[in-house]
Length: 268
Image 1 (cartoon, helix red, strand yellow):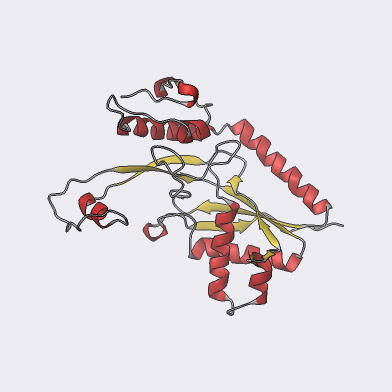
Image 2 (tube, helix red, strand yellow):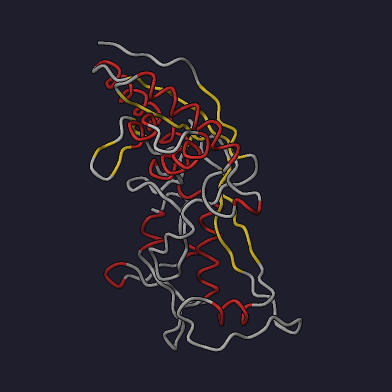
């Protein structure tokens, strides 16, 4: 197995990594190549196995501190006159968010917090999910939908914060997809440039590993118009159950059980 080279050319040995190593650096800033300069699949798998074993560096103590920091920040917003609604979301099975974020040589995709490197559900994803559901259940051109989510020339009234682990580390799971007809898929992919090859039983299965998570996440919505924050929360609760978040929802990933943590508060 090749030793990955990291920032400033430093050699990183995966077998020597601790659980406190930064996932942002490991998954987005290093590349393992063999003696021919080709990306090494074995080292990629070792990185993913480290991510699962270390829980992407989630420390229970730090998770608690960040949860407390979020609570204090929301209290400040309430004091400024904002309505805050807190929700709790738990995947019914597993969650695959950010598979399209190929911000690394090995194309390992997962949504990570920009400071801590922990798994998150981006606020933009939650907003998009909720907006998609609202469009299905509302009248076309609904004024409430436009006010809540905004338009090309106006900001929406409700803010969707990034969902973070709800007081304890999320469970990181190394999952695998095994296409049985890779030549067919690669030949029909956009920009392949080759003639399509029909699927055949003699094609070898090619395992593709990827990261998923499960566990409870804290979802927070804020805004100055109480009724609109409430409406967004109701839509989000239904959207998590009906549409699911992230990738591979047709395969059962991403469906969320979303519940309220308590009544909203508004001061000022």
